[in-house]
Image (cartoon, rainbow, N blue to C red; front, side):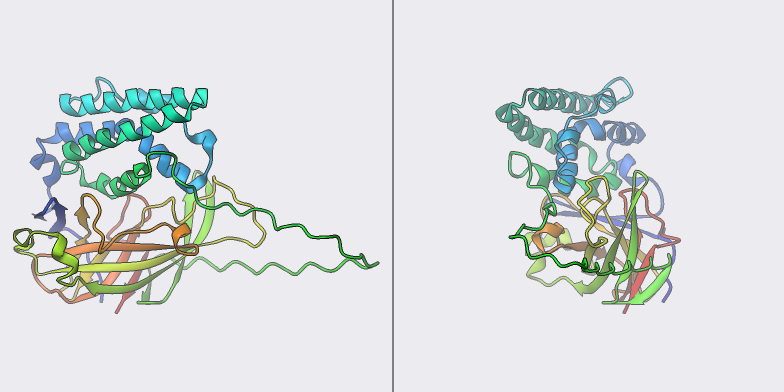
Length: 347
């Protein structure tokens, strides 16, 4: 079946036992949170208010300590451009915390560095409380930011491929052994391809001019069970006909013998965005969750033998609950294309 452009039905917001369904194509988030000033202020303040956890997310993916300091350009965003006073105050706290983080890094003071990481948590909580409803496009990153702060210190980075262990020199022969030819890399699956559930596609990842390949497979579209939804209050589910999970596997494809390069994009450094389509032709965007939703959460590739496990929840509030397709609409938060999804998996 074909998936049509989203516009008739909004996303579903899930927070602290509250579920709100958006309807129509207007800018509901900004209105509900106090108007355009709040939404604009939250967008400007995002990088500064979340500066330290943002750096930890990148470090977790790359392991590059030289990129830990927060850039001056980010610190300068906390200023008069942020019109909403409450959001501006949060950004100023983020700026001060980032400056303390940078100073600790410069002095190689791990205790002060970790204090800045711990102090970043309440600032992130304040930002989330003030801005989540106003700018839901940013919510997809919140879980990653919270996860990066969980340990109270630098998170463990993705394991780097090291050199093979050396062994005693073997006797040499007059003819050097020929090196086996590396396996050819697969071809990128053309954009717009439709496949069946369980079939993989080859995705091109691009970051700062560098490219890499990854394999993505939507493995299942399943309806949430009553046990899955026990974490929610019954009142919060009123008006929801069904909650569905889209589960996918995402794995990097690297040329054999290629050394680790933190600048090359990986499955842990992008943010896949999905939509689902039902039998009546309606497309639904993801259900936005605040905090940890254990029945449906992502996990990093280094926890799963190199496979990043993805799970995206969806809540349907009207029409058909017969989910027929899941589409990958983008690999970066806020940059999606419902009209031209990258790939679609159908039942």
